[in-house]
Structure formats: structure tokens, C-alpha cells
Image 1 (cartoon, rainbow over the protein chains, first blue to last red):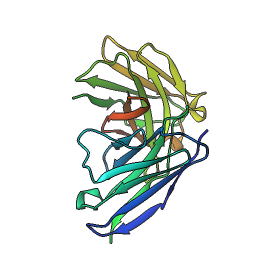
Image 2: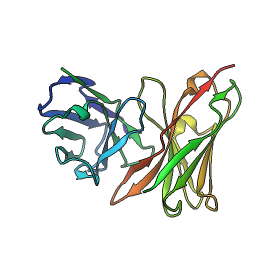
Image 3: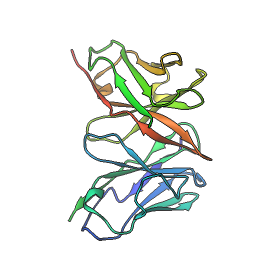
Image 4: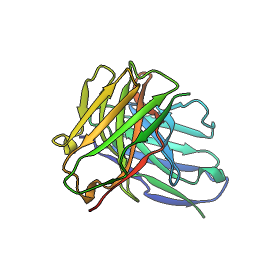
Length: 107
Length: 119
């Protein structure tokens, strides 16, 4: 199984900050990487698929980059509604696996 | 807009079978993969497995001996059965659609259903 490790596990940031979350795969996953946002009591919401393609309706302050084993989610200017937990997920091989999550909290 | 809705018993006794159904509306269940994902309280997401509209399945190894997924295209529903449950199976269970555009991703999710295993 491909292990996905996110860093950091949590971070504190202010509105307007640039935030970067990294996902490291235990083997190369090319660009088969998706990012989700989850708020308490809600289902995850797809933000980015294929490492860098923004899902329809997702604000352009979210972007994804990288390929291989190290991939990144960037929020260019953090907004109040972005405080949530973010998960990466690889779809390179079965079983599909998720990172452990990164909780973005208000500083 | 595709919508998914989980349904089923919210309380299951230890050693019994957890049974959930996901009803899909706003789109056809055909030509997609459909997954079950669970999340214990305060923890991360675990992919249980997927079923294609044809009935073909892939199960994650930790669940393989206990899980069965099925699909009913006439009702636009798919289902999960997990046998011999223990307290460790207490979690929010989500159903999700496997969208595809060069790679797979979960583009539509149900709201989730909390299933508690307790006597």
C-alpha cells in the first residue's frame, strides 16, 4: 500500500496568510493526487484533482503542485472560511489511501 | 447536481452485521465507481472499497474478509455490508462517487452516517 504523510499535522495562521501543506508518498504517484477540505460534521469536499486541476467552483486561491513523491497544496491568501482540515489522497494504485490530515487553525 | 444519501441502522450490536445503503439522485449510477469511506471520531479517512456499476469490486485488505458491496442499478443504489463488527467499527460512514478525468477522485459525497457499535 502507498503511505501518504502530510506535513504539518496542524498549523496556526492568520487571515491573509499564505499557507502550504505538503503530502509525501511512500513511492512515486506521478500526479495521481487529490486534495480535500473537511469542516467539522461535514463530508470532505474535493478541491484539487490530478495534483493541480482545480475542481469547478473552488476559489482560485487554492492551487496544487508537484509530482512523484512530494506534492503541495497552497492557499495563497487564507480566508475565514478556509479554517478546516485538509486531506490528500492518492489514486495511483488500489487501495486508495489518504494522508492523516492537516488542521488549519486560526492564530 | 448529483446527490448521495446514506441510510441504515445507526446502532449495531457487536458481532452483528452493519448494513448501509447509498441512494444516488441527480445522475445515473452507471459507468462510475462508487466507494465507501469511513472516519472514526476525531480521526482520518479510511477507504473501505469500491464497486463499479457492473458489480465489479475492489476491497481494502483490512476489510476484505468482512465486507461485501453490491449495486442495484434499477434503484440507483449501492450497499455496504460489514460483518462481525466490533467497537472499532464505530465511525461515520460516507459513500462517494469516483469521478474520472485522467485519474480518479471523489467528487460527490454523501453527508455521512454515524454508526455506533454497542450492546
